[in-house]
Image 1 (cartoon, rainbow, N blue to C red):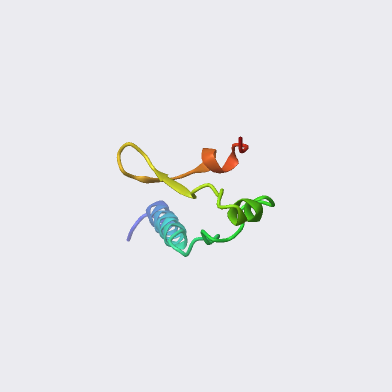
Image 2: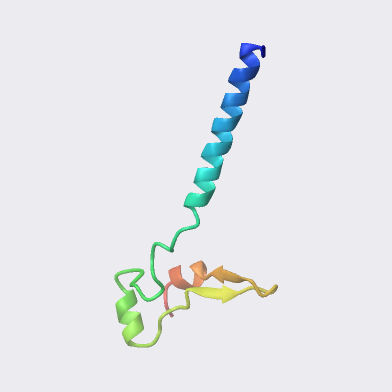
Length: 76
């Protein structure tokens, strides 16, 4: 017969792994915001004048990154 502490420890490990697995699978859903939805109160104004900042850019390694700086900095 196994020691009760060993059984308890294995149950805790199984619970932690199950929670981690469920949390990991929950992040694989659809994006919350579509690329064509307005991002701020001024975005429709910029889109109507074809001055809307791109939502992503490609870095020096070729990976798509979110264009946070381009979307948040004020227009000149």
